[in-house]
Length: 365
Image (cartoon, rainbow, N blue to C red; front, side):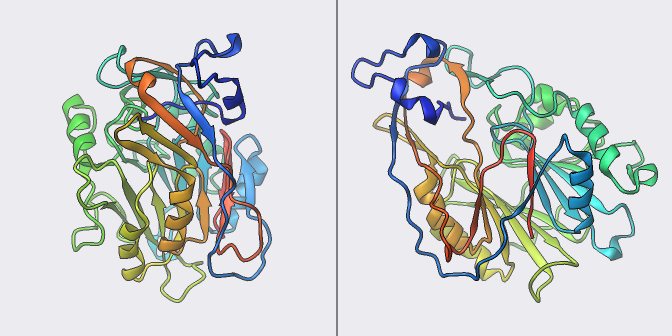
């Protein structure tokens, strides 16, 4: 749950009188500052080619990306809804790609507590308007479309939910899915989703690392867990860890992890991932530092992310949860934001930074 403001228009906010110019009258009053560029002190890596990007409107490029047999992440909106496509190991014996949907919110507003408290709308249009449209796209690009769908015809294999807030756990969007779709959700989100009585299987995300990180209804080569900052009673600053076997992993373990932390997580809490022995392929973490005035910090922002990506040993840092959203409500009056620019492009950064627009994707090589 956060309220976004366009970084490029921060100069249009009068931080003394808190009066926006006419163009931005629909936006809540938020004090915004622009931080100086971040520096990178990571251990150097050999120079390499820029990551392979794609857009879902280019079906041929998407098919070529799938043919690499490497994981693909696609930004379905400009905020924090993601499609993660994982290549199935040859031993799986089913279709070539496992499609995991994360924090889906497509159409309509999202509101937490009550509309007077916090309500938001997308300003940047999602790249797909419905999950049925996404299913059709997945069918079109799948190399074995005639035999690839599950028994109920679905191409979305599972859903992961990171938080109970409705910009992550949007009921109208989620209920577009078939009842048979497995949902893996954090504690409060799982209880909320169960109360809807729509899905047959709702599993509470287990802790990571732990003996119970395997999740029912997921293939044996895939597990989803959660890392939580100690003392964080609301589980706000946490991370979802997606661990999968890979025939094309650039390491001897043949296992890789994608870490998703839309609000951010303290770097020290990610050391458990390195200790697990599973190399981190990518960390999804936002640039914007958002806090409630004189109170709780919400999104930890880019400076925290720069340290977190090194703590996790990630090869990619992918920005998330930084959309410019139209919003209102009481909570918007209390928000303070620092917009961190992307880290400078320099050799030896230790990771590749990627920003993706709505409908854009990247191959994690």
